[in-house]
Image (cartoon, rainbow, N blue to C red):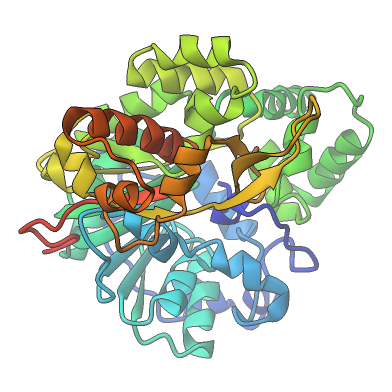
Length: 464
């Protein structure tokens, strides 16, 4: 499991590392708190179900993950909690044909110690259901529910594969850092698709294959050494990490990981008993096997060459000429160090016109851009006068010409692309204008520097 907070790159320290004192003690709080159970947790006749001694269940009962916090409004964990704000932050990507309703039905599949509580706190008008296979994790989340008076939150002890037992359907499903630990990930994702409404979205995060190469080397090492999920085993992991050669393939991962300050995070990363990684092709295969439609990546910048290879135009051009899915695969290989993939999927019977950008079409001119970057002047590495560029924190600036800068300066979330072009003094019309807008906005969108709202449709995003 890895936390949604991995996107913003902060860490949480000074929190309990194994089962919190409140749960390990206090008369077996995990058994006393009122978290219902639906379905069976130990049915060997059903593929993908969990036996009572399943190693993953046992791990998350003992090693609470994420490391528990007692107050989600504590300033020390504010950014951490905001890592679960994907529903609001990415709603324009999930439902580009219109704004997100505030009263969605939300399922947090594999909620751990706080995931569902965070969604409920950040989205008070949504009805949130959290499910997990760990009673101990749910017990802590129940405490957060009571502490924050989250009347919009319900918790259930059950595996994802039995989500249909809830007897409900959902507008939005969050399943981040979970599928890669399941016995049969396609079956788990298919189960979530079966409780998704027609215009709903499933937000997914799975481990990336290439960026975790060093992690899997160490997992193999610790298995070879017979290291167990015990305090002694965690000590061995810490000693190993502290004495690795600076060139070890795991070092880039260690520099970016956000959950290794706790014992539970070390167990989850290096001593996990069921852990599958995914290349881009694997992600697409997972979605296909689950009978769903791949909608898009949460962060386009990492899956297209325009930003990463802007200073190597021959490379960017070669990659850009590939079919779309091959572009993603090429960038997966080119970047290498990416440890996770964030993406979102939907039902196959959802109207593609409600979420697909109409590239190379006059319909594109009616779409409404929202800027995610700023215009600035940047100094060229080669010297000379500064250039106009689009800039965004933690991203390489993208150099643009004066006409492109003028168009971008009118992106305001209200005007259409055609109106932005007119305001910028672009005189072309018809097909020439479509080519100008298509080329420029494709650059901006692929770099993650703008989102696009599609023209209003008859259907309502995330409608029941």
